[in-house]
Image (cartoon, rainbow, N blue to C red; front, side):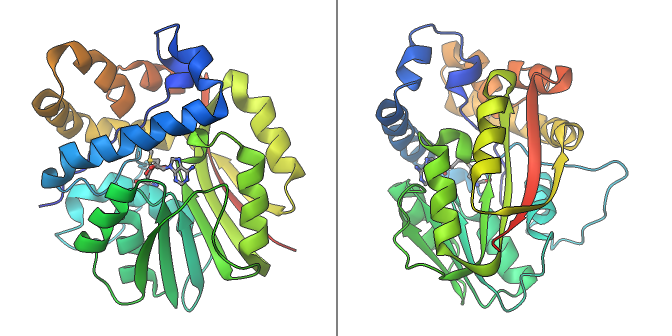
Length: 281
Ligand SMILES: C[S@@+](CC[C@H](N)C(=O)[O-])C[C@H]1O[C@@H](n2cnc3c(N)ncnc32)[C@H](O)[C@@H]1O
């Protein structure tokens, strides 16, 4: 059975230990911490079949997305992928997902949206190896790589997808330049992530300066909060099982469990979670 566990680290923005903030403001230190953290997470959780690492998404009323029984436990996280990816038709398209995590979204989209080919890329080598074992599907492959230095030739992809990961990148404008470089003309960048209020101006400035044209955007705080609620019980059970007691409060924040600080910040609007569709002209 697949189990969803949403565990996003947002040290820079709401981690209460004062030492972490200055450390995270140094790009290469931030990258090094993620590089250690996510493989650690994969090793701890892989026997639980944790296929998604996002905060999830749920509309009111429900969209009624039809899912197989095997996908049903991951419904709320799948709904985030579906919300982002269904902004364009993926059928017959060559898709790159940057920061695919444990590959649950890559697998779901490959199985249900018939892309010509789907590549999942992530910095976490242990996670990529997990994906290769767990999602052996025709037309789907996984590679280790850095969002800021994509190893593909110019104009390779019809679609680049990126879900809840860009807050980890030390140089976000460089990532956007890489997205634009590997997209063919007319290709789409489908994107979702969040920023705390203090990071909003830089985020918007970078997106406006990117060589991509905005097609649509939406603030999805309410949907993400519902997704967090839906996953809270299961995430809490996993936290209790895998984290020592003294780390569990922190774990609740990372996992976005109901009542956690990230949950409250989203509710108060101190965090903006958005989805986007851009086209390369
Ligand atoms: C919160 S997880 C989201 C994973 C996946 N998109 C999902 O929704 O389940 C963030 C992911 O970003 C990846 N990541 C962090 N920094 C990266 C980088 N510089 N290049 C590529 N991936 C990176 C992490 O390894 C992790 O898998």
